[in-house]
Length: 189
Image (tube, rainbow, N blue to C red; front, side, top):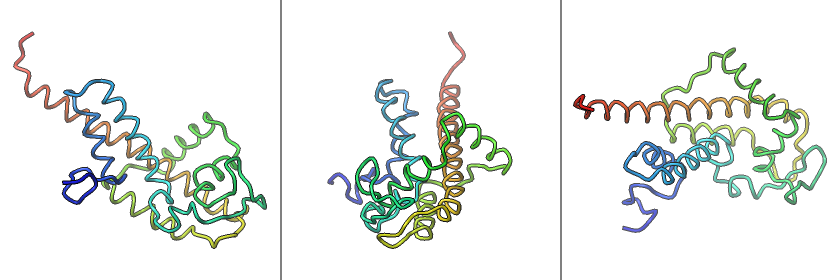
């Protein structure tokens, strides 16, 4: 069996890496440092999977789709591309600091009664692909205020769902481990 083959239980794909790292986070037989690394990857991958162009195959996840951003051709990393606009550009354009983002996202979660739902990493990737297809623009398009007004609320919801889903994964993992540990405890000190 080779790494990444269909026979490999944990293929080299974010959809597979989420359950792989979740399993490692909850595995108390692993070294604490290994579990910490798995937690970092889990947080990163759950977040990435909710950004539509991390799950979109066209143009290397829209990295090959050059755009202008409010008339500007260059970003701090070089030329603007659609993936970067969704990773950073639209979020930066909102002009909120971390505390403002947190307060706004928490309020929206409460106001919308938003929940994590029952999906898994495959479901989340499928959601992201659909959004990526809807938000796709032609190479050279200008990302303007109308585009920002339409898609910044989508980004906000994706951030909210990513946080809720990550919390649900972690809570379920730790609850299962605690339940297993309790079941194995015979009550002796």
